[in-house]
Length: 332
Image (cartoon, rainbow, N blue to C red; front, side):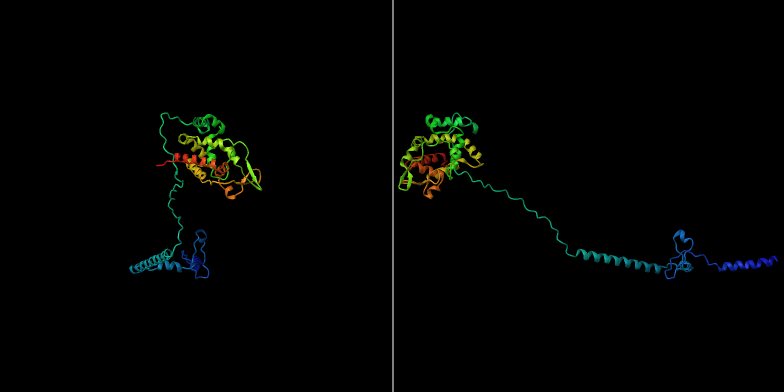
C-alpha cells in the first residue's frame, strides 16, 4: 500500500513539472510577435521578455567572432566614417562657396583739410611812427575822451574844438561815422561833430526848388578849420591813438578787420564825389529835402554831404582828405 500510494504521486509531479514552461531569460523585444508576454519581474525592472526561448538561444548559440568577421566590421566602420567625412566636406564646401552678402563697413574718410584763412589781408597798413622819447600808455577806450580831446585841442586849438566837437564817446563816434560815409545814411545822433547851424536855404525858380548859394556859406567855418589843419601832425596823432580806433571798430562788429582799410575806403568814396557846376534841384516828399535827380539821391551819404556844401567847399575838403590819405598809408 505504501509503495502503491506514493508511486502515482511521483508520476503526477513529473507530469506537472513537464507541463510548466521553462524559465525565460531577458531578450530583445520580438516585434514580429503578435504580443510579447511580460514576465512578472518586468514590472519591477522595466525589461520585456519574449516569452520564448528563442532570444536566449540566439544569445547563447551565436558563433564566436573570428578574424574575418572582425576585419569585415572594421572595414564597414571605416567606410561609414569616410562617408560621413565626405558628406561634411560637401556641406562645408556648398555653404562657404556661396557668395556671401557684403558687409557694409563704414567708409573711413580722411580728416577735413584745415580751412584756409579767408580773411582779407591788410590793404593799407599804417606807416611806422617815429619812436618818441616819452611813450605814454593809452587809456582804456571807455576812458579815452579826455586824452583825445586834449590831443585835438593841442592840434586845432581849444576854441574850435569846443565849437565843433561833441566831447562824449569821441573815438566811437568817429569810427561809426567813418564806417557810414560809404553807406546810404549816416546816424545823425552818432556824429562826432555838432550839426551845422541854421536851416537848409533854398531858391525857387518857377516850380523848381534848388539849393541856394547862401546855403554853402553855412559850412564856411568848418571848411576854414579843415584848411588850417596841419595834415602831417594830424596823421601823427591818428597813428599814435590808432589802437583806440581799432578796438572801437572791432567792437562795432568787425572783429579781425582793419580800421585803417575802412578809413581809406571811405576817403576814396568821398574823392569820387562829382562836382556840380550849377544849382542842384531838390524835392520835398516829406519833411526833409532830397535831390530831385535819382542818380544823386542814390549816392553814398558822404558824397551827398559834399554836394550840399557846394562845389568850392567840396574841393577844399577833398584836397585835405587826399593829403591825409597819403600820410596814413604805408608807401614802401
